[in-house]
Image (cartoon, rainbow, N blue to C red):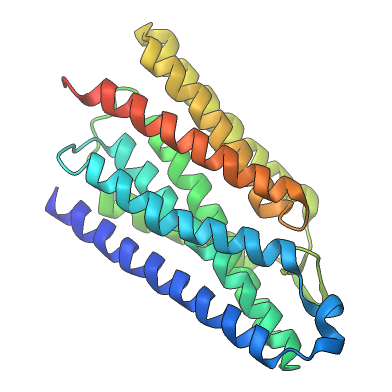
Amino acid sequence: MAVRKVFLTIGAIVSLMFFLSYLLSLFLGIWIMKESRWKENLYLWPILVGGLSSAFSVFGGFGFRRLFRRMSSLEIYFFLVFLVTLSFDGLRILNWIFLLKQITPYFGGMITRIVYFGYFMGLFCMFTSSIYSGEISYQKAGTLLSVLGTLSLALSYSMPVDITTLTPILLYRVGGGEYLLLVRGGLMGLTVLSFARSAFLSRSREEWAICVAAAVLLLGRELAFFHSNTPLGFAGIFLLGIGSFYFSRKSYLKHLWI
């Protein structure tokens, strides 16, 4: 239990640092941007969506951690780690700064990999949370986090990144689209199915509510990450908030008497 709290505290500090980095980069970008380049290089939508995602990670995560501070469920623990991973979205604003300052795209490619690392880590954490919605006795959260981090690092590092093409979502284009879609779809599908299996076996209304909330949360994550250059990105943030609220509330009721 103490080790988990240490990991969550470190995660909270990292989220706060990323959010402060976002704010600093935002003010810096506005300051260095010439008026004639406003429309060309602003990237308003992904900047705002990334900032909202990072802010939700900090402030929403803080509230949920206080709610669950006396509960030891790993289902909840990995949900809280998922919230931490949302803060990585705010780092994409650095690609805007690099563009304004005409810094080599090599660093933009590194930022792209880091942001994708946070995305994959979040999916893996929600999948692990779904596994612990059932009866799993393995309790070594630190080991699991290390494994998930290694998998996420391997995926983000192995992706081919085209540093000549900056996409509208402020990330450089990555190759292997079909492969990534298979990984994303597979993880999200398995996550929802795992929650649904637990709900079916337990015949609990809270479990079914958790399953639906997880599906809404994952949909919101997809929209906020891959459609941040459109109003769908804001819809994704809204779904993230709704899904997280109901997921946390129903999980709290589920574990209240355990």
